[in-house]
Length: 352
Image (cartoon, rainbow, N blue to C red; front, side, top):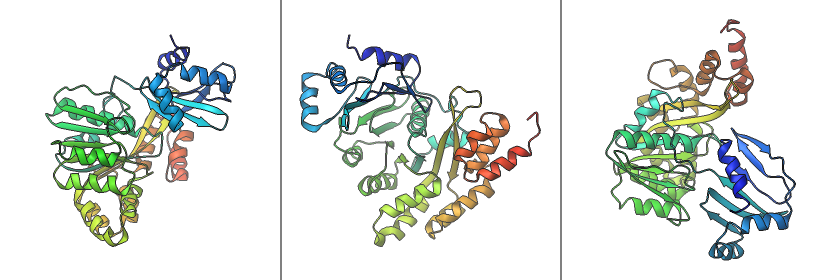
């Protein structure tokens, strides 16, 4: 057994998501978003090299020596060179996919999985649980419809097994050269649903939009802190002479945006996803088409209680504070208007 296996076993047993194993530091695990040092000595460059080379094949060692970086699936591993020597990060690949219900997702998210076409975005900062939400949406489609789902990811976070749907998972760098290359191939493979792990450049975004225009449901993630910023990011990456056309296209194709942040549960165990949810309607389409995306935040605030499923981030936060799911101290860390959250909490009854 490789010596590193004892650390990887600890990650799995503790329910942690990552192991950071770097020369010049003690081993560190990430548990519920927090980095926790393990009671182990500081790793030397030589010791780290021995640990990591022990789990590589001869071919992997040769590739690493050539590129100075290596991804391989044991957990999901990335080995690299850093200032103090070798380093690595191991991410748990989960076989059990969480359901939307287990994640506490509102019905509006489930309704988005029933769409037959259009574009749905899942957004948030790094580490906000986008991949988990995406996996739960794919799981819902898998259990409730007979569709061909092609999921393009970098890297694979969850493994899906066919239930009612047919799920094809491809990892960028292993099964395809890039997101764009995988998308071009996917468009020829009769997909009903395309899942794009990250829409981060002009070519990938353009191909995802093209797929949605052909009648496919495209669900993709973006690094953006709100629905409005996600829309702006798509428009901003487009050449200026084509932006008006993109606004018109998005006004028709965009079905919904889920923007999320993770907040520690008030009980101290686990984290809760606080959500901003934007759903397509005439008003939203009008704002996108007319270049008034900056007004979307205000719209969300006024529409959060209209029963449509639309909600602003702060409306979700206030509800969770009232229900005791999250504390005020944690809530204000991600709120758009922290002072409003504090004022709301101050007016709550003592026994609420």
